[in-house]
Length: 281
Image (cartoon, rainbow, N blue to C red; front, side):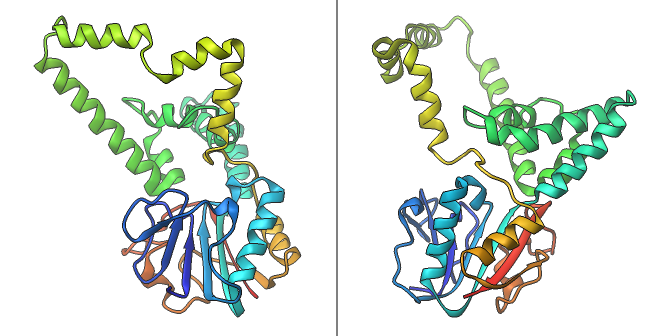
């Protein structure tokens, strides 16, 4: 086992680390349900890192998870936690509100996007939510602002949406809209073949509650948010020593920028408007 631990890594990992996520995205990533603990012994790793993961736990779960991170760290080991910065988002919201209230159309678009950043991932009940809808628009009216706010993740979503739209357009011109396969597929889809229609039939009005509950337990929604005060306070309360904030390229972890976890090879920040906190066991 490598002594640097990257939890909830998604597709952001490094071969020098032990990378763990709920679902493996590559051979270098171990699949494990982190709600059930970290599958390593006490005092076994030098570094624990997780980025944009803690906000997906409810407050009580977050405390338990951080205590579990502390358990596997060696004495003197470092934890690095990255979360969305609530304070920064709130300030951006207030700036957009002030200008949008004057009737400025572009500021109105910015206001709409910031509201989605603040609330959509907390309240959404389907994959992607309204924020995903915004990023999948054929023409995003404030693309520069969106990319500044959302960083590389937003850029990748926008690019993928445009590739998918281009592919759909190309396929539509290659096939006759009245072809038998398309008519058959449409009939099957409208007739509701598959598991979900059966569940709808059995559960009736309770089906929607089941669907929303299943989605919200998958881990996509944000269940809490943090700022520079509450994140440092939480780390101290669960037993870490000397918690403090860093920049994306600053760390007590040796060779930090070489791993390109919070920054890109050119030095740009992977997830803008984030908080970066470190502490020791």
